[in-house]
Image (cartoon, rainbow, N blue to C red; front, top):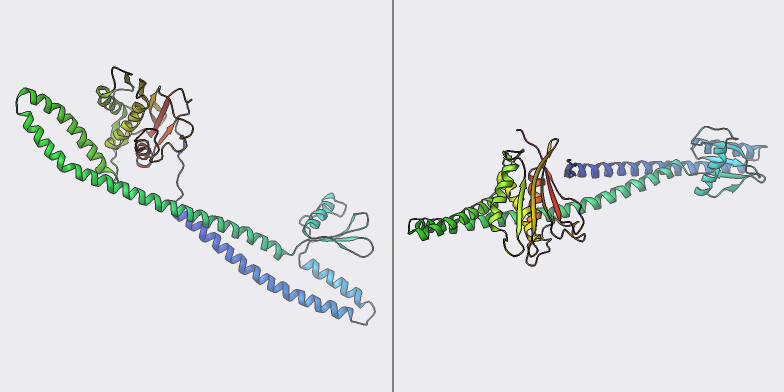
Length: 387
């Protein structure tokens, strides 16, 4: 079964999100500033009218001023509920829902308004419950937007820093790999010439030359792999069954046979399944997984099982062993460079295999959950290519 691989968010999307949040935040701030200026003008005007009404000697002028003040409050959108001494609503304005005074929601909303502002005593023994101005609610929204902008900016900064560090590390890795391949070229050419001279000598040296030539071919492949790092991957038809047999054939004569013997077996169709990939890099990744199992069985012996199965449009390449397994302490960082349990190990093999499978071939490499005493099973999932 193929699990969806988490996709990295493109930097353009992140930057666009920051720009949008910043633009909305600035627009909200400018709009709220205009609303507050308008509220200041309206408050000053109301204060002047109240003072003028209270100083008016005409009969009923104060009542007229009070009614006009109530009308102004209604028009400004402030939620308002008045209740009598028993807590029953007697009037309401600017509620967020349409309801009569006997609706229980009105009394419940009065309690909510009291959490925003404490009620004030009205005429007689009643209370006036009131909310905030619309501008105040906009200010709360602006605070939320600015918090989102701050969190996004911090996340972008962390992402940019980690991206820069990872890019520098990858550049260094590519440069070191290519330089290593270049430095290996000259001594390998010289060694090839010496092997040719040994090959034309007596039968004893010819036998030695044959063994040396096999090792030189191996070194040539290693140099070729290092030289391929950082270059566009090829897309050839690769039979994983043939690849598994080839890797097993290389490891078999080099495994311990006497004390704590290690055996390797392959369970895969001889001619398939086929994936579209780089044969050199895929062989490298499989060798890294098998080498990890060989190291796990060192000093105790056991069996390594390499199997290839198909599941729909996905091919699973599995490498299992009956070694000590992977401790829970390092499972989370198992595929990070430098993580190793071996004395003197570099911790590069699994990290390299994961990069080849996932970054180059758009597959997935994972450690299947097993108990600490049941060995380890690494599964590389690859999209099946055209047969």
